[in-house]
Image 1: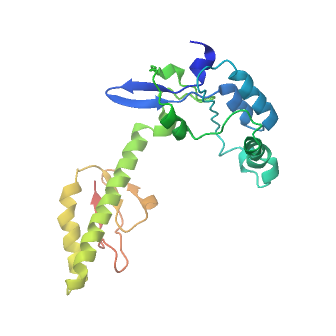
Image 2: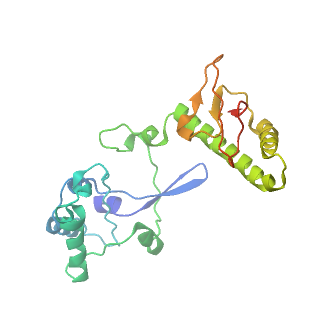
Image 3: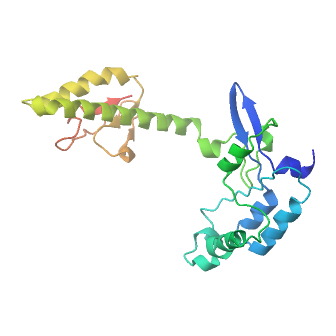
Length: 235
């Protein structure tokens, strides 16, 4: 398989019964796009790199752009969108570009991948960062566990809030109803862990409790779920 065939078409990757589509990027064009790019040079490079392709070539550039001034400058005419992208589309509309801009989803719909590849962890190129285990995106085990606890606390809060809203109109003592709902739902999420989250507090105010340490009570405003001294939830 020639290098342009390897680089300019999508592939299938399968593992454990799951399947994803892998789209290679052109590393040289992506690096050129990172901090400044002339549309004429890009047009020439794409045409030269694909001139021997006897298939619908998908030339893809991927750039970490949210941190670069080339993408974020407030002077549109000197940035990516005004200096490069708009003139490139103008050439396409005029019929002088030589290739067609396309969304990856549109390309995959027209030309679904047929070749299968095996993705090796040591071949995951993430520029200056080690990305073989994808931890910089997925987080460490402790970080993922923390997000799981936040989701559980959020689910518990919304369960209590929904139950309270359904019953408060018919109740003579709204505070009593609130306490009964909190106590009734707590056993379903009580796992005995040492991580406690406060109901009625912002998620950023969650506290990690050490054995023997005490937590302040969480007081809720009228109409919110929770209770006073007994509003902490052990997850």
